[in-house]
Length: 197
Image (cartoon, rainbow, N blue to C red; front, side):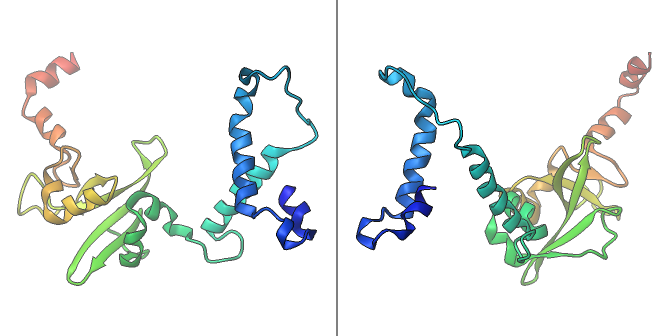
């Protein structure tokens, strides 16, 4: 409202918009502590709907990010940017026809001759969580032709996948051999017997 009201003022009588917004943000942040600053009382104008305006700005920014405002936005790359950083975007390509991930969406991260394949998992552990897994070699058998997937949470994990370091992660899951935890149970029949008992 302050920004709108000063639009009609001469240039030398206007406060720059970033200053007005910063003062408003500082006031909103300080509001809860005002009674403790020694004021006899604090009067609140109940007819000013501050939260609605703030949520409208946040909503508009989010819609723009997603392309819901009619623009391109980041659309289906928003999660990629948040997970791995904006520097990944030029190397990222969705491979929607790929069947590598049992129907989950697949992407290729490529630069020159190097590439990684990732799967977008939308129901991790059946809990509805969303995240990425990267295709790595099977940790159980060098000659295994199954697909092995390891969860990745950031760009460092992608580097570890490319260098082979992530292949030995305990969370790697091979489609043929399962995860290392599964193998431990198979090698321990007594433990299974105790569990069954």
